[in-house]
Length: 138
Image (cartoon, rainbow, N blue to C red; front, side, top):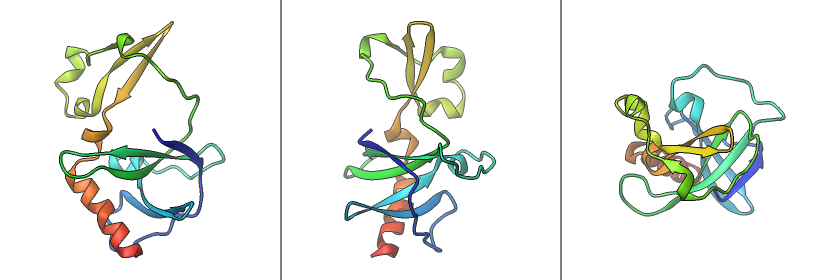
């Protein structure tokens, strides 16, 4: 995670797929923004004062590294965790298609943290859609 920002104006790209919200101008850099609710087929939720844009660097299944943003309902806290507390995805979960996006489960005191694999979450087609949004914004 590079940074977490409050919601800001998102310029929509009419020709982008529904899960691409559009692009933001972050200190002069144009960054595509995905809506994870739409990406996973979840019902929409209005943005609130808790909504955030998380900016990350991803590689996807292949190709160059890209900086993208994705919207989340809220961020409760930011943690830096050691790889030593991360266990592989439980076998029962590992068989489901959605588990491909789970990198592992972290045990921190009395909590379990599900860690997403961003490179798998944003596959080639999703990154291509982000590239399209960037081209449309140029």
